[in-house]
Length: 162
Image (cartoon, rainbow, N blue to C red):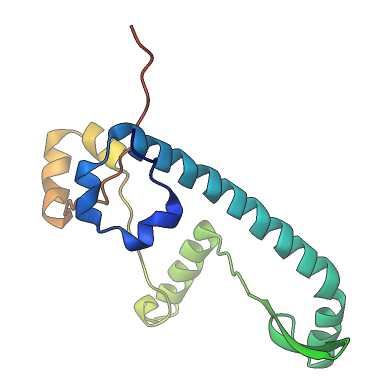
């Protein structure tokens, strides 16, 4: 019986050799990777929360002293014989109320301004709704539609004997 394929072996194994591997090995590798992803996601969340708990008060004070609500501040910390620089980045996430933007754009037009100089307009079409439209409406939009393949995804599931 051959040894199972593990994540640690992937860096040294040419992808073409996967053609010779039993599906059972690829299935096991897929499960190992899924478990590792879940573990890594949990570890990253824990570390992020720990760093936030440890440094957010100092970072908030530095931001306040600098007169800013967002952005990057740098803390210097020393422990034992080592010095550390901690970069604390608090990103700004602006959210825009689409209905209010629409009203503001209408006001710009009333003032004789060109809204395109101030805002970008993006149209989105739900593929599900597009397929449900009457054919005469779909034909109007089809020239603007391009369909491209996404990344292929494969999932191996071990079936129970019948």
